[in-house]
Length: 70
Image (cartoon, rainbow, N blue to C red):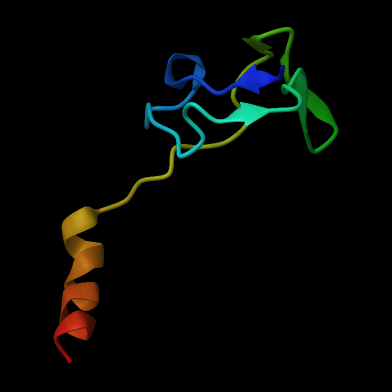
């Protein structure tokens, strides 16, 4: 018996995962980022270290649509 991935445990704005329902042999218990513990014992630790990533969908998809029509 292993760990089963569940969407309600995802710590993301996305709220979905391609791993939903899959069974794994282990479970993440601790995550380190640049030598600092950022997740431990089921909780996010400390304060956020990054900055929000802003994405202008309409501006950045114009070239993509153009490329798809060629």
